[in-house]
Image 1 (spheres, rainbow over the protein chains, first blue to last red):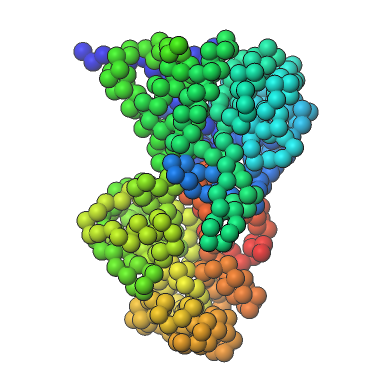
Image 2 (image 1 turned 180 degrees about the vertical axis):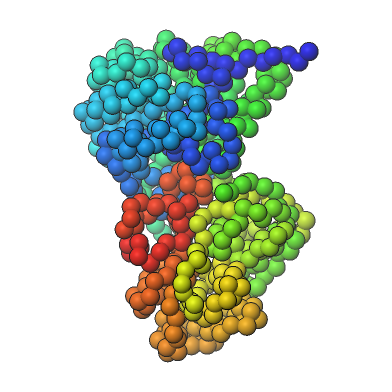
Length: 306
Length: 246
């Protein structure tokens, strides 16, 4: 008899068939990937970071390759919350029938409140992921996520207008991630998602200019995996609320490592860009990796490393 | 429709000191239009390399690429029989379903390749394309004879005057006073803009931009058009003259 390997996890009462969630910003609203494979194999999807108003984002070029990763300065290009609700969400629901994580970003407390209150009313959305960590926009984004007080304030305001589980997505560009995560927990956050991208820069030495028009951008990809594991470990050990781990995950082995560090679910980001099948292939590889490591239930290993 | 597949290199040879032609064998069914591109995974590189399709048939894809960085430098050393992981069928490509009977095809440098399959397609549709190719200097010219072998008129410009008309593609157009009812173009941004300014007929312009994924998910290569934001990789790389904002 073939042994059954249980990959299911539960995130604040939301059951996922497996812990794999394509990370916000790398998966659009699913449509482009649905041409490659059936999205229902995924644990959940975190959709493209959404703001109140439609945004083009930053000037191009806004992509720079690095060793084992890339820098992006897309800058939250999105059609705006109303269009996401009226067009993108129904489209996503047609091609995806598992939990949807709504990634919301903003430039003011009022904007976070307004967008989260709106998306909270959407039946299709099961989890709200509040992005206080985008390094590519000014006067918003990351500036809320780099201080415990402001991160807590966003959390409080969003929690006051929502009913669904709220995860706060944090930035690694800080000196004390635990203080920020704990402040969010105390302010009522249901979970923490980390890490967003690391602020980085590349220079075109021939032209003597930054590669990216916006000069700096967010560094992601395989190279940041150890930073992500470290921060997931620190936060999971300091907080009681669940953690979604994110950053440089590109294999089933990475998923298990991040779960051992304390992640209940694991987001896959930049790997989707290089290989559109990355998330699917990781899910397919999980049982074999579990067999190799003597794991029968994936949920058993969450935070097992002390 | 686009797909990922494994392709085998049949040949990889220089056309000029910096420009190479690679012929790949594999599934070509997802390539449906001239001017589409493929995205090639290279060992040790995080992002794939997007390269336009110069020509294709039932079993092979021909790409022509210029060595401009470490990725293409890696490609130039590849040998027959080596295998590559490639996404195919990317981008919208040129649309030939229009009334134009005498289209002008304008290519600059490494923007020339996708026009080759386009020229063949237009000829097979009974149209009479005229081709204008622009290069910096005579030693950088490639495919002039290949286009001519299709039985169409081909004109060249070189910036230094070492071959053909001295100057740019727009100087050829001015000097020869061709009659054309549409333009298809691919090349550096200043060339596209100059062509746009020098002509009045409708046409299609193929752009390039640094891309994240190449299939429309990442929004790395977005541009603004008169009809809203477009992704160069997915809604482009070909834009209609009427929608371009310079």
